Amino acid sequence: MKKKLIAGILGVTMIAGMITGCGGGSGESSAGTTTIKYATYSAGPDHLEDMDAMIAEFEKQNPDIKVEVEVIGYDDYFTKLQTQASSNTLPDVFEMNYENFNTYAGNGVLLDLTEMAESDEDFSPDMLTGNTYEYFQNDGKLYGLTEKVSDVVLYYNKDMFDAAGLEYPQADWTWDDLLTAAQALTKDGVYGFYAPVTYNELYKVVAQNGGALFDEDGNPTIDSAENVEALQWMLDKMLEYHIQPTSEEMSGKTPEDMFKNSEIAMEVTGSWMVTTFADAPFEWDIALEPGNTDQVHHVFADGIVASANTKNAEAAWKLIKFLSTDATAAKIRLDSSWDLPATNDESVQEQYTSQEKPEHREVIFEAMESGIMPPVVDHYAEVQNAINEELNRAVIGQQSAEEALKAAQEEVTNILK
Image: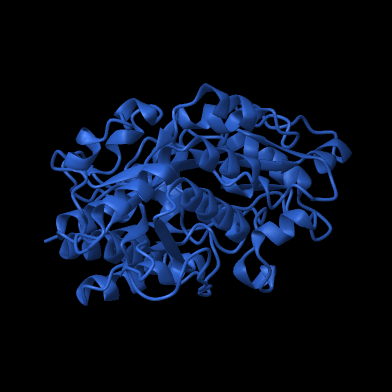
């Protein structure tokens, strides 16, 4: 959710490539095959070959359909989609995250899949795990199928814990336990902990403190006392306790690079990072993330949707169904640790947890039991940007936690009017 869910989790540059398909636009080719376009953000940059393999399998199963794939960096993806939606040039099929789904569905740019799903004898809702079939529904209509889910957990350097004589993170740890360990690990250019100070982190951390950014009716409650306390905790780790590096102290390095270089001992990041850290030159593992009053974890979901203007609805549905429920597609995703497939298959969890690293991979499933989905409100991107701007000012000391959330409350209230 993913991700990436998921919040700066992919590269910022656009990676465009056409793979496993004939050229030209969507429609019928001279050979009688149907060509459709598919856009994705989560395949790049680490899963381009896996995407190739999935499309090759789809085309093998559907020899009358060819797929042109465009992989776009997450930071550019929704800007491009907005432009395409305005000009009625959306790809036939495209990846969509949970956070933005309702906005697109509400604007009428997505294809209603309800009838095709109900009439497809080779499909049933129970082919998807848990309640993931419901994630990409709006006003009782089906607009997409969940393809994969992910969450955020605590990664830690076991060698550094061993050298410091510390107990590994435990399931019942609180913020205080995390602080104590991080302080013991912070020395000689090494920081004990890292988590971003962003909107995507804020809505989870306030929940760990019994707060919420919005009430049940979608009204902003951003500047509540619980939320101010939670943001203060996020800032204090950098500005008071110095267990987390500031942007200046990171000197342009990513937290993932610093973790792999043993410059950060613990990092809160997504389940998708198990592949990135697989070749780290030290022993590492994952644990549930500590909370304060509550233990809460990010859960992200990515789905596959189609354009309401596609001229190839049946082919689009076949690709959506394949990417969400096909066993071979799920295996490719699992073999590459590209998040968890949404397909309801008992072998999925067994295959996922049986991989060598990390040792306690089952934590990724356990975290989902205390998971929180991103809050879904109108004008989601504007709301996110407004809050992030205030957080950024707090990070550089231009305003306090209380001032930042008060300003964000006012801005978001105006946005949602």
